[in-house]
Amino acid sequence: MDTLRPPIAETPADPTVLDTPFSVFNIELTNRCPFRCVMCARTGNMTRPQGLMDFGLFRQVIDDYVRENPKQAAQADCWLHHFGESLVHPDFDRFVAYASARGVFTALSLNPLMLKRPTALALLRARPAKLYLSIDGHDDASFERIRGVAGAYDASVRNLLDFLELKKSFKSKVQVIVSMIDFGLNGDSIARKRDYWSNLEGVDAFFAKEFVTWDGNAPDVNVLAGNRPPQQDHVTCRFPWSRLTVTWDGDVVPCCYDYDKRYVLGNVAQQSLKEIWNGAPMRSLRREFLDNRVSNPLCRNCDYLRA
Image 1 (tube, rainbow, N blue to C red):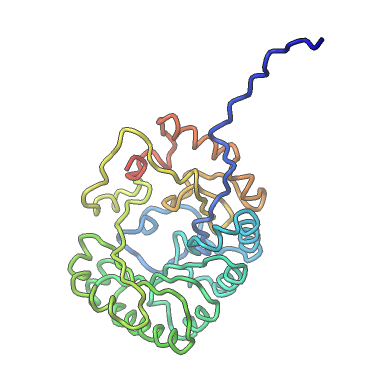
Image 2 (cartoon, rainbow, N blue to C red):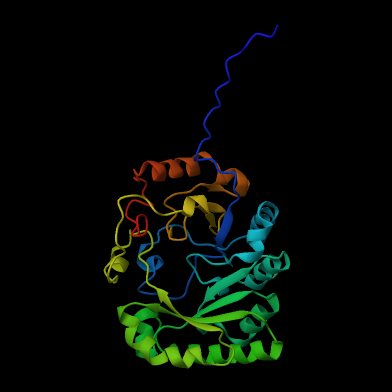
């Protein structure tokens, strides 16, 4: 006769360990930039070293992403920038072309001032899926107040218009969005230029982009903010459960607002993205969020933690 045995208690699943795969939200080709934008935390607050991503490292990240989450890689925007102007990278087109060839939905936000004809041709040949062409202001003076470069608005417009002509001649399907940052210094310019950019042939959409204070640690950016998001009594941010950001040197951070690498999860030169996704630093971050006790230097001052 069989002896009755008590049921074996199951160990509760650890909520900080995820079975769901990660998304790579953005990959930083470089954190170098010739602009001095007043709304960018990079301008007066970034202290980390500047550099260019190695192609072998980039290829490893793309291959890892496609292997682990091919559906998301093909459908969701993977931005090939973080805190820098990607067109500064001398091999930017090689990076874009590789990601596109692997089926990644490749996107970039860039400044039209950088889009001189050789660069524009290289970009179109690399076949990105989506481009944000950021052109703030409505004349040289307003552009300089926002982007910190003198005498650059008209040149930016010429480059943008030339790019749209090239897009047409290439019969390119790249989605082009003209974007302007929606904050006080740009209000008049948006009112003046919205209709023009919205109705221009080759422009798929106009986007008044939300002003953000990044991780809340840049005082000069914080003072430019208007009304802050209403704060809830609990953490609402879901980034640690959905996405990763890779910086130019292979470090992985949990958030696209982390301009100074305040919370490093690991490095792709030593670990796979899958290992980093459920590694100790990420699990610790998720635990802070679940316990509603956020003290880490990246998230504690963020306006969007409990938005």
